[in-house]
Amino acid sequence: MPKVLLVEDNEESRDGLSRHLKRKGYEVLTAETGEDAVELLRRHKVTGMLLDVNLPGTNGIDLVPRIVELEPHLALLMLTAVNDATSAALCMQRGAMDYLTKPIDLAHLSRAIQRALQQRRARLDSQHLNQWLKEEVAVRTAEVQFERQNLERISLATLEALVNALEAKDPYLRGHSARVADMSATVAAAMHRSDEEIELVRTGGRLHDIGKIGIREDVLGKQGPLTDREYDHVKQHVVVGSQILSPLVHLKHVIGFVRSHHERWDGTGYPDRLAGEVIPLGARIIGAVEIYDALTTSRPYQEKMDPQLAVERMRDLVGTVLDPAVYEALAEVVGRRVALVFLDDQPA
Ligand SMILES: [Fe+2]
Image (tube, rainbow, N blue to C red; front, side, top):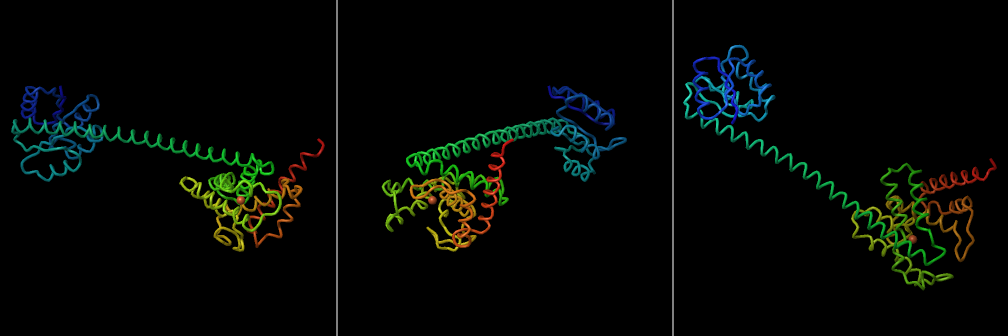
């Protein structure tokens, strides 16, 4: 049974309305003043309210905001004098649902209460629906995001496995990409790049030579110098690599690193002859570290070089092949590592 609170200071009018409402099946609470009404509202769960505008003490107009704050969805109807349309409009603005002019037509009253209660129900339903939708959207968004990250991780792991398989065939290349990845990330950190960028550079390092999958094995494994044709074929690995990765939109920046890691600071590199800072920083770092890694690991045609010596040799490439800032950072990182190894070697 809906509980209705009737706030009316005129006793005769209050009793008449109360009797009518009870006959219509409502449970009725009554109050003579606004303060009593607020008190009752605090103690009872009320669904509808009839509120006289002219009350002793706080009038109905000033009560509306307090009532709406206590019970935001209350079916609130104002009872106004015939000549008081302005007050009625004000109350509606503040959150009342309807108003009735005195003397109250009882048939009209019943319909107005029913309408207001229906409106209340509809507002509550839509609020619940909104809340449910909001929660549902949040849950689904989190699920989709989780799935996407999972797929990204899996695709990356698959590509890394491919690189490992490629390198496993060549004893001189084994571990090359993993070393380039770690060193490149350290150089990026030494250049004070953001954590996100450092991780992109690391991923770029892992995948920079993935395009070698598209290079013929006889050329890839050739001992001795390559012919011009063969060299042109090897150069294709940067283009093939970026093509392999192109469907992976989350690797957008990494693809640029892969494609441009053989560009040169002076613009004479490949495949696009980019120069200076037009070459993505990640590509400049990976390119420099790749040279360092080639010098410091044994190859069929050379003994491995001492790290400090390799850095000194690379100084000749600054300004032509290498970005001076990247070279400085690389030299700093290698210097730090050499110092650490030196400390480790000291007797305790
Ligand atoms: Fe390469």
